[in-house]
Picture 1 (cartoon, one colour):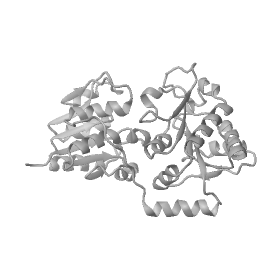
Picture 2 (spheres, one colour; picture 1 turned 90 degrees about the horizontal axis):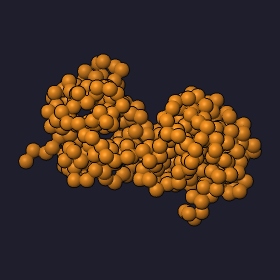
Picture 3 (spheres, helix red, strand yellow; picture 1 turned 135 degrees about the horizontal axis):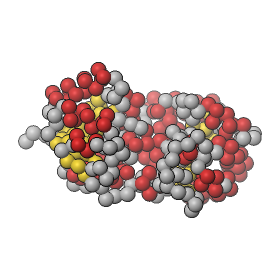
Picture 4 (cartoon, helix red, strand yellow; picture 1 turned 60 degrees about the horizontal axis):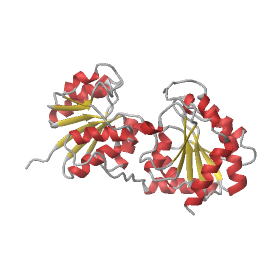
Length: 333
Protein backbone atom coordinates (compact mmCIF):
# COMPACT_ATOMS: atom_id res chain seq x y z
CA UNK A 1 0.00 0.00 0.00
CA UNK A 2 1.41 3.38 -1.04
CA UNK A 3 1.88 5.74 1.87
CA UNK A 4 -0.17 8.90 1.81
CA UNK A 5 1.47 12.15 0.78
CA UNK A 6 0.27 15.46 2.19
CA UNK A 7 1.51 18.98 1.64
CA UNK A 8 0.55 21.56 4.26
CA UNK A 9 0.98 25.32 4.03
CA UNK A 10 1.47 27.81 6.85
CA UNK A 11 4.03 30.40 5.89
CA UNK A 12 3.92 32.57 9.04
CA UNK A 13 3.79 34.18 11.48
CA UNK A 14 5.10 32.87 14.82
CA UNK A 15 1.80 32.75 16.69
CA UNK A 16 -0.10 31.49 13.65
CA UNK A 17 2.33 28.61 13.14
CA UNK A 18 2.02 27.72 16.82
CA UNK A 19 -1.77 27.57 16.35
CA UNK A 20 -1.34 25.37 13.26
CA UNK A 21 0.90 22.77 14.90
CA UNK A 22 -1.97 21.02 16.82
CA UNK A 23 -3.85 20.49 13.53
CA UNK A 24 -0.80 19.06 11.76
CA UNK A 25 -0.23 16.89 14.83
CA UNK A 26 -3.76 15.55 14.40
CA UNK A 27 -2.87 14.67 10.82
CA UNK A 28 0.40 13.02 11.86
CA UNK A 29 -1.19 10.98 14.65
CA UNK A 30 -3.85 9.77 12.22
CA UNK A 31 -1.33 8.92 9.48
CA UNK A 32 1.92 8.02 11.29
CA UNK A 33 3.66 6.71 8.16
CA UNK A 34 2.47 9.43 5.79
CA UNK A 35 4.79 11.84 4.05
CA UNK A 36 3.96 15.35 5.26
CA UNK A 37 5.68 18.23 3.49
CA UNK A 38 5.35 21.58 5.28
CA UNK A 39 5.75 24.78 3.26
CA UNK A 40 6.78 27.74 5.42
CA UNK A 41 8.78 30.95 5.30
CA UNK A 42 12.55 30.41 5.77
CA UNK A 43 12.39 32.30 9.07
CA UNK A 44 10.20 29.61 10.64
CA UNK A 45 11.90 26.43 9.47
CA UNK A 46 13.45 25.89 12.90
CA UNK A 47 10.12 26.27 14.66
CA UNK A 48 8.38 23.81 12.33
CA UNK A 49 11.30 21.41 12.74
CA UNK A 50 10.99 21.58 16.53
CA UNK A 51 7.48 20.08 16.28
CA UNK A 52 8.88 16.88 14.73
CA UNK A 53 5.74 16.52 12.60
CA UNK A 54 6.94 17.14 9.03
CA UNK A 55 8.78 14.60 6.92
CA UNK A 56 10.34 17.50 5.06
CA UNK A 57 10.20 21.28 5.44
CA UNK A 58 10.34 23.34 2.27
CA UNK A 59 11.17 27.01 2.78
CA UNK A 60 9.40 29.38 0.43
CA UNK A 61 9.53 33.16 0.32
CA UNK A 62 6.33 34.37 -1.35
CA UNK A 63 8.07 37.65 -2.30
CA UNK A 64 10.76 35.79 -4.24
CA UNK A 65 9.45 34.51 -7.59
CA UNK A 66 12.31 32.03 -8.01
CA UNK A 67 11.59 30.56 -4.56
CA UNK A 68 7.90 30.14 -5.43
CA UNK A 69 8.72 28.57 -8.80
CA UNK A 70 11.11 26.12 -7.19
CA UNK A 71 8.52 24.95 -4.65
CA UNK A 72 5.83 24.59 -7.34
CA UNK A 73 8.23 22.45 -9.37
CA UNK A 74 8.98 20.27 -6.36
CA UNK A 75 5.27 19.85 -5.66
CA UNK A 76 4.68 18.75 -9.24
CA UNK A 77 7.47 16.18 -8.91
CA UNK A 78 6.23 14.89 -5.55
CA UNK A 79 2.59 14.52 -6.63
CA UNK A 80 0.97 14.80 -3.20
CA UNK A 81 -2.68 13.72 -3.20
CA UNK A 82 -3.71 16.53 -0.86
CA UNK A 83 -2.55 20.01 0.03
CA UNK A 84 -4.03 21.79 3.04
CA UNK A 85 -3.80 25.57 3.18
CA UNK A 86 -4.04 26.54 6.85
CA UNK A 87 -3.34 30.20 6.03
CA UNK A 88 -6.08 31.17 3.61
CA UNK A 89 -4.27 33.84 1.61
CA UNK A 90 -3.59 34.13 -2.12
CA UNK A 91 0.12 33.61 -1.50
CA UNK A 92 -0.50 30.36 0.40
CA UNK A 93 -3.18 29.01 -1.94
CA UNK A 94 -1.38 29.55 -5.24
CA UNK A 95 1.39 26.89 -4.92
CA UNK A 96 -1.08 24.00 -4.67
CA UNK A 97 -3.24 25.43 -7.45
CA UNK A 98 -0.33 26.00 -9.84
CA UNK A 99 1.11 22.57 -9.02
CA UNK A 100 -2.26 21.05 -10.00
CA UNK A 101 -2.61 19.03 -6.79
CA UNK A 102 -5.88 17.04 -7.08
CA UNK A 103 -7.29 17.84 -3.62
CA UNK A 104 -6.77 21.38 -2.41
CA UNK A 105 -8.38 21.93 0.98
CA UNK A 106 -8.87 25.36 2.51
CA UNK A 107 -11.29 27.57 4.38
CA UNK A 108 -14.58 28.67 2.87
CA UNK A 109 -15.38 32.32 2.27
CA UNK A 110 -17.14 32.38 5.67
CA UNK A 111 -13.78 32.07 7.41
CA UNK A 112 -11.20 33.38 5.00
CA UNK A 113 -9.67 36.85 5.24
CA UNK A 114 -8.77 37.68 1.62
CA UNK A 115 -11.65 37.89 -0.83
CA UNK A 116 -11.78 35.29 -3.60
CA UNK A 117 -9.09 32.91 -2.34
CA UNK A 118 -11.42 29.86 -1.99
CA UNK A 119 -11.76 29.73 -5.78
CA UNK A 120 -8.31 28.10 -5.80
CA UNK A 121 -9.44 25.20 -3.61
CA UNK A 122 -11.25 22.06 -4.69
CA UNK A 123 -12.72 21.62 -1.19
CA UNK A 124 -13.83 24.52 0.98
CA UNK A 125 -14.44 23.92 4.68
CA UNK A 126 -17.00 25.99 6.56
CA UNK A 127 -15.70 26.09 10.12
CA UNK A 128 -17.87 25.80 13.21
CA UNK A 129 -15.17 26.06 15.89
CA UNK A 130 -14.33 29.41 17.48
CA UNK A 131 -10.59 29.16 18.19
CA UNK A 132 -8.31 29.40 15.17
CA UNK A 133 -6.38 26.28 16.28
CA UNK A 134 -9.63 24.30 16.25
CA UNK A 135 -10.57 25.80 12.90
CA UNK A 136 -7.24 24.55 11.55
CA UNK A 137 -8.14 21.18 13.03
CA UNK A 138 -11.34 21.14 11.00
CA UNK A 139 -9.21 21.25 7.85
CA UNK A 140 -7.21 18.24 9.06
CA UNK A 141 -10.44 16.42 9.84
CA UNK A 142 -11.72 17.13 6.34
CA UNK A 143 -8.48 15.70 4.93
CA UNK A 144 -9.20 12.40 6.66
CA UNK A 145 -7.64 12.79 10.11
CA UNK A 146 -9.28 10.72 12.83
CA UNK A 147 -9.27 13.70 15.18
CA UNK A 148 -8.80 17.41 14.45
CA UNK A 149 -5.87 18.20 16.75
CA UNK A 150 -3.10 16.22 18.38
CA UNK A 151 -0.44 16.60 21.03
CA UNK A 152 2.15 19.36 20.80
CA UNK A 153 5.70 18.55 21.87
CA UNK A 154 8.17 21.20 20.81
CA UNK A 155 11.82 20.30 21.20
CA UNK A 156 14.69 22.58 22.13
CA UNK A 157 18.29 21.78 21.26
CA UNK A 158 21.04 21.01 23.75
CA UNK A 159 23.17 23.73 22.18
CA UNK A 160 20.48 26.37 22.76
CA UNK A 161 20.01 25.10 26.32
CA UNK A 162 23.71 25.61 27.00
CA UNK A 163 23.83 29.06 25.42
CA UNK A 164 20.86 30.35 27.40
CA UNK A 165 22.03 28.79 30.64
CA UNK A 166 25.47 30.34 30.22
CA UNK A 167 24.09 33.80 29.51
CA UNK A 168 21.72 33.72 32.48
CA UNK A 169 24.48 32.49 34.80
CA UNK A 170 26.66 35.42 33.77
CA UNK A 171 23.85 37.71 34.92
CA UNK A 172 23.41 35.80 38.17
CA UNK A 173 19.90 34.67 37.19
CA UNK A 174 18.64 31.20 38.09
CA UNK A 175 14.89 31.81 38.33
CA UNK A 176 13.02 34.48 36.41
CA UNK A 177 9.81 35.86 34.89
CA UNK A 178 9.69 36.72 31.17
CA UNK A 179 7.86 39.85 30.07
CA UNK A 180 7.06 40.20 26.37
CA UNK A 181 5.74 43.76 25.92
CA UNK A 182 5.92 43.96 22.12
CA UNK A 183 3.63 42.88 19.33
CA UNK A 184 2.80 43.56 15.73
CA UNK A 185 0.25 46.22 16.65
CA UNK A 186 0.71 48.58 19.57
CA UNK A 187 -3.07 48.60 19.99
CA UNK A 188 -2.93 45.09 21.48
CA UNK A 189 0.04 45.82 23.76
CA UNK A 190 -0.17 46.79 27.44
CA UNK A 191 1.77 50.08 28.01
CA UNK A 192 5.55 49.58 28.42
CA UNK A 193 5.60 51.80 31.52
CA UNK A 194 3.28 49.34 33.23
CA UNK A 195 5.55 46.45 32.31
CA UNK A 196 8.38 48.39 33.95
CA UNK A 197 6.37 48.91 37.13
CA UNK A 198 5.43 45.22 37.05
CA UNK A 199 9.17 44.39 36.95
CA UNK A 200 9.65 46.38 40.10
CA UNK A 201 6.73 44.72 41.92
CA UNK A 202 7.93 41.25 40.96
CA UNK A 203 11.47 41.95 42.14
CA UNK A 204 10.42 43.59 45.42
CA UNK A 205 7.82 41.02 46.46
CA UNK A 206 9.14 37.76 45.01
CA UNK A 207 12.87 38.38 44.58
CA UNK A 208 12.69 37.28 40.96
CA UNK A 209 14.28 39.28 38.19
CA UNK A 210 12.48 39.84 34.91
CA UNK A 211 13.80 39.12 31.44
CA UNK A 212 12.40 41.50 28.81
CA UNK A 213 11.97 39.86 25.43
CA UNK A 214 11.99 42.32 22.55
CA UNK A 215 12.24 42.03 18.79
CA UNK A 216 13.73 44.04 15.91
CA UNK A 217 12.51 47.63 15.91
CA UNK A 218 11.34 47.44 19.52
CA UNK A 219 14.34 49.15 21.10
CA UNK A 220 12.27 52.19 22.12
CA UNK A 221 9.75 49.88 23.73
CA UNK A 222 12.53 48.19 25.68
CA UNK A 223 13.90 51.55 26.83
CA UNK A 224 10.47 52.57 28.12
CA UNK A 225 10.16 49.35 30.12
CA UNK A 226 13.66 49.60 31.61
CA UNK A 227 13.35 53.29 32.50
CA UNK A 228 10.13 52.54 34.40
CA UNK A 229 11.52 49.55 36.28
CA UNK A 230 13.41 51.51 39.00
CA UNK A 231 16.22 49.36 40.43
CA UNK A 232 14.74 45.94 39.55
CA UNK A 233 17.54 45.21 37.03
CA UNK A 234 15.57 43.57 34.20
CA UNK A 235 17.63 41.72 31.61
CA UNK A 236 17.04 42.63 27.95
CA UNK A 237 16.73 39.62 25.64
CA UNK A 238 16.84 39.61 21.86
CA UNK A 239 18.12 36.13 21.02
CA UNK A 240 17.45 33.76 18.16
CA UNK A 241 14.23 31.75 18.08
CA UNK A 242 15.74 28.55 19.45
CA UNK A 243 17.19 30.42 22.41
CA UNK A 244 13.88 32.20 23.00
CA UNK A 245 12.20 28.79 23.17
CA UNK A 246 14.61 27.71 25.91
CA UNK A 247 14.12 30.98 27.78
CA UNK A 248 10.32 30.65 27.68
CA UNK A 249 10.22 26.95 28.54
CA UNK A 250 12.24 27.49 31.74
CA UNK A 251 10.47 30.66 32.91
CA UNK A 252 8.56 30.69 36.17
CA UNK A 253 5.91 32.76 34.38
CA UNK A 254 5.51 34.58 31.06
CA UNK A 255 3.47 37.78 30.73
CA UNK A 256 2.47 39.18 27.35
CA UNK A 257 -0.29 40.17 24.98
CA UNK A 258 -1.74 38.44 21.95
CA UNK A 259 1.64 37.92 20.32
CA UNK A 260 3.81 35.09 19.03
CA UNK A 261 6.10 34.73 22.07
CA UNK A 262 3.09 34.40 24.40
CA UNK A 263 1.55 31.64 22.25
CA UNK A 264 4.93 29.95 21.92
CA UNK A 265 5.27 29.98 25.71
CA UNK A 266 1.91 28.22 26.03
CA UNK A 267 2.97 25.58 23.50
CA UNK A 268 6.13 25.04 25.56
CA UNK A 269 3.94 24.55 28.65
CA UNK A 270 5.22 27.61 30.48
CA UNK A 271 2.79 29.26 32.93
CA UNK A 272 1.46 32.46 31.37
CA UNK A 273 -0.62 35.53 32.13
CA UNK A 274 -2.14 36.80 28.88
CA UNK A 275 -3.27 40.41 28.49
CA UNK A 276 -5.95 40.91 25.83
CA UNK A 277 -7.57 44.01 24.38
CA UNK A 278 -9.09 44.38 20.89
CA UNK A 279 -8.53 40.74 19.89
CA UNK A 280 -10.83 37.96 21.07
CA UNK A 281 -9.19 35.41 23.40
CA UNK A 282 -11.90 32.90 22.50
CA UNK A 283 -10.53 32.93 18.93
CA UNK A 284 -6.89 33.94 19.38
CA UNK A 285 -6.14 33.24 23.02
CA UNK A 286 -3.81 30.66 24.60
CA UNK A 287 -4.40 27.14 23.28
CA UNK A 288 -5.48 24.94 24.91
CA UNK A 289 -7.47 27.67 26.74
CA UNK A 290 -6.30 26.90 30.25
CA UNK A 291 -4.03 29.82 31.11
CA UNK A 292 -4.89 33.08 32.88
CA UNK A 293 -6.35 35.59 30.44
CA UNK A 294 -7.03 39.16 31.60
CA UNK A 295 -9.37 41.29 29.53
CA UNK A 296 -11.44 44.30 30.49
CA UNK A 297 -15.21 43.73 30.41
CA UNK A 298 -15.30 46.96 28.40
CA UNK A 299 -13.11 45.52 25.63
CA UNK A 300 -14.56 45.55 22.14
CA UNK A 301 -13.39 42.95 19.65
CA UNK A 302 -12.31 45.09 16.74
CA UNK A 303 -8.92 43.73 15.66
CA UNK A 304 -8.14 47.41 15.13
CA UNK A 305 -4.52 48.13 14.36
CA UNK A 306 -3.21 51.28 15.98
CA UNK A 307 -0.05 52.91 17.31
CA UNK A 308 -1.26 53.25 20.90
CA UNK A 309 -2.66 50.72 23.41
CA UNK A 310 -6.37 50.01 23.05
CA UNK A 311 -8.32 51.84 25.80
CA UNK A 312 -9.48 48.51 27.22
CA UNK A 313 -5.89 47.56 28.00
CA UNK A 314 -5.58 50.65 30.17
CA UNK A 315 -8.27 49.13 32.40
CA UNK A 316 -5.80 46.39 33.40
CA UNK A 317 -3.95 47.77 36.41
CA UNK A 318 -0.44 46.89 37.51
CA UNK A 319 -1.79 45.47 40.77
CA UNK A 320 -4.29 43.30 38.90
CA UNK A 321 -1.66 41.84 36.60
CA UNK A 322 0.80 41.32 39.45
CA UNK A 323 -1.86 39.47 41.45
CA UNK A 324 -2.25 37.03 38.57
CA UNK A 325 1.51 36.60 38.25
CA UNK A 326 1.69 35.72 41.97
CA UNK A 327 -1.15 33.26 41.49
CA UNK A 328 0.80 31.50 38.73
CA UNK A 329 4.00 31.47 40.77
CA UNK A 330 2.23 30.05 43.83
CA UNK A 331 0.52 27.34 41.78
CA UNK A 332 3.82 25.78 40.71
CA UNK A 333 5.69 25.85 44.00
